[in-house]
Image (cartoon, rainbow over all chains, first blue to last red; front, top):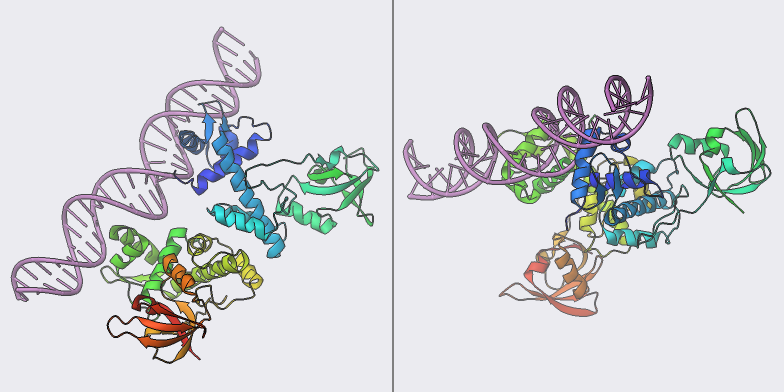
Length: 221
Length: 221
DNA sequence: AATAATTTTTAGATCAATCTAAATTTTTTT
DNA sequence: AAAAAAATTTAGATTGATCTAAAAATTATT
């Protein structure tokens, strides 16, 4: 059985991300946007992936992963997230620095390597951004965290992940002293712009904008 | 300045290997052989590398690396060997298993990554096969080991590296109990086929063929 | 030094991934 | 339901890395 190329793997990973939990159809344009290519290029690649049995594709009707395609996508995600753990935990990178490097490492082909890396890291369940790491069998269970905007005043929650992975956002959180595991209590919400005062780890208070709240994943305790 | 492709890096690495310590000219055919391509393909690539200033190339006259090309080649070698150390020391791979994986990892582009990896590994000077690891500035000093065939009967030497990196050879050494650091004493050489009896670590004796002797790098003590 | 053998390069194609421009299909709006 | 707008696909080209077959240059042999 032929190997999938770097590019093919990226398409599958992006289709997985865009189709969401429900496995919705993904549009050609959305893929063009996410892959930074033109729609015509996407069409070509979709035909190819369909031929390989990795996606369900009917002209003009968007695209979904097949079981086989899903398997490939999840394996790429597994590798990406394991490498991110390695870069942060072992090499001392910041969580804002690892995405691009992991984007390359995720395509290194060797099951043997992934399994040994996984063991070396102690079979981590989550990556440095709080995203769950699929197991070797491809089981990926998204924990049902809530977004901070859904939390009431007075409630204490634990910060578990981010929706936006942009370095600038992560650096913003660093400066605010918010990291995975931080305890957050909303002390006040401003009606006007929905910005909020929050207390972090019961010891310092700060303002966060709605934009930030929308991108913080938390868990009730 | 544009990045070099995976393929370009491989050509430079192979030119470096084939031109040896003296920086001799490398022939088109030798490159075709080593890259598993045809001579015509090599010619195309050479023109391209010459245009980029990475090699000295005149038609029909073989090829040498420029300073710039040498720098790229040595950096690839540095990455390859550091990753091999990682795979063996941290992930527990055998020295016979790491070449192909390192062949992929060596092309991951990030100076930051290499330097952190180097530090994580404790700035190793040699890879799992005894090959020296160039430093961050690109200094690569080949230690002047001798080949076991140049060792006299009765002399005790230390095994420091291998010339042949083939898994089958390395596995053969594993079975014979010969590893980096082993003390080897030649007790007898057979005139007929130059095979030898050797004592390993002063505790067990075995026969090795000329083929093996030719590929063992050792050091006097 | 002429001829033969070998090596290398050129010419012209192919394949994967991309592009632009034009055509087609689907969706939305009037 | 027609027309307009948007999305998608097709047609034809381009780029990087490769190929085969043929031509040219170099090297070796007589």
